[in-house]
Image (cartoon, rainbow, N blue to C red; front, side, top):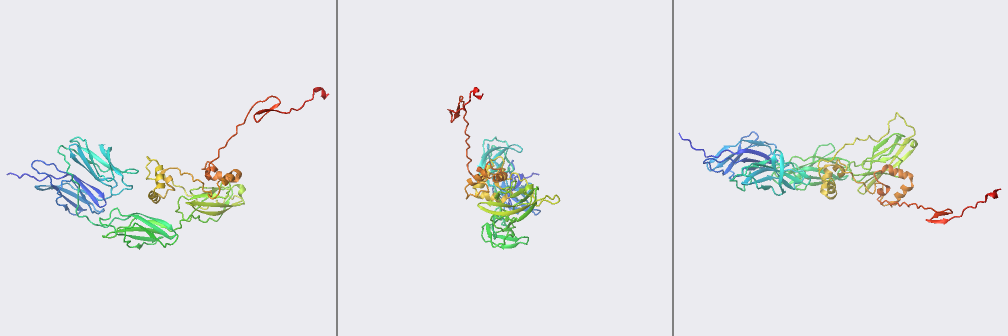
Amino acid sequence: MAYAENLLPDKPKNLEANPISLTSIIISWDAPEITGNVTAITGYQIEYKMDSEDFTVITANSGSTSSSFIHQGLDSEIVYSYRVNSINSEGTGVSSSTVSIKPEHTTVPAALTATAISPSQIKLTWLSPSESILPIQGYEIKREINPGVYDSIGSTNKNTLSFIVSNLATDKEYSYVVSGTTQYGSTQESISASATPKEDSTDTLEEPTSSTAVQETISTPPIKLTASVVSSTQINLSWSPPVEDGNTPITGYKIEVKSDDNSYTVLIADTENTSKTYPHTDLTTNTKYTYKVSAINKIGTSESSNEFTATAKSTNVQISPMGKLTIDEGKFFSFTVKLVDNSMKNVVFSLDENPPIGTKIISNTGMFSWTPSESDGGKTYTFYVIAKKDGLSDSQIITISVNDNIDESKPTSTSEPVSESIELGVASFVDETKDAQTYVDRYNNEASYKEWFDANYSEYDSIYQAVGLEEPLTIPAAFVDETKDAQTYVDRYNNEASYKEWFDANYSEYDSIYQAVGLEEPTVVVEEKKFGFCGTGTKLIDEVCTIIEMPKVKPWWQFW
């Protein structure tokens, strides 16, 4: 009995699936070897299933020899499984093995494929990351020389997603990875892709096929919602659009708000535009407001964004009232000067009007401290506290009475305990191989970079602290009134001992009073003394030996 020869193609090999974004997956495979009288591959049948459902045909015949396929319009909560059959002129062969995966964001170049296009060349193609903290500026291509060890072999700009490697050996397998480059470094490497140049390798110019029916869904939520206080009655909202729009345009946004600890209410049901900002006005001063935003497309309304809370307060510099205090002589006393709006950053504090010796206030934190001496007992002192920021200022008077006798059983009176400081360290975005000053320059010269830093790293007092640099001195110092002649401060320092002691105790970070008030320190010229020798009866005057009158002495016999 004779058996008919099987002329159907073998099944595809090495089927793989990798996510491209929250709504798309790429699958790739190796074409089967053609042996005997089996005719060439003309296309592939591709099937998929969701979770435990039955397989469904996505593409009955791709009509292409491309060995990769992009499936779009997916749900990130569902597991998708795939299998592929080869097709030739005789029909459809058996199915490949099955692979399963969920869609998710990619932070590295995705869907890297390697295809031999000649006996000595391999073409690499990839897709951009679906989510990146910093903008991608280009791509670096690397060849694997040992598992996990790579050599850089070339690069492309951000718009070029392919690269041809030449001068390769025939019949040798090569493996590659790709990483994205940003202003502050590189992403991690992509998954690797391998290919082997053969004598019959040719460039088919085939790109990955994709599903023709795009599923339209509700978008993902808006991201990076922030709220900034404009005044005691207005807060401005801003956000970024959804990463995935559900394959249909965003038409508006829904905004919800709650005050203090109440429940959410709808502030705007549909903005009916694509603006990503909103001014919330007519607010109640000193009330805390919390917001969330949802995106709207023709399919429906997305889940809500992150929440963001802000309190409607005055944006002026205003010191909280402190009133009168009583303390004991000889005991350390401290408290922190507070602002009405405690969210304000980079405020400079100082003391004025010659406070007692030993009184200090830390300029960037407002921490006041003093240990009154025994001679201060029974006296009352008035302190003038000043707060300044960006040309705005406020001052408060504190009256402190010092008890004459120390009562050991009585605790030291303090406004509030000193909080233990937290060591933040260098911020996570800093590449320590780079010059830290470059971050400071960007903060000072790029408004968008400054807004990004202030919104995301508000726990730092300044950009200098975040990148590990010492903050430069404020010149002139905070106590200087720039409407006055700076020389008056120098004169007081040189002529008033108490003023000199006050300055030296509170502003030791400055090299001199001249630096603190912004004046150039004068050069002191020391006049060199002149020396010479003159004979008896003369004296050196103005570098000239001058005769001087000598006293007359009586002869000895005249004393008898």
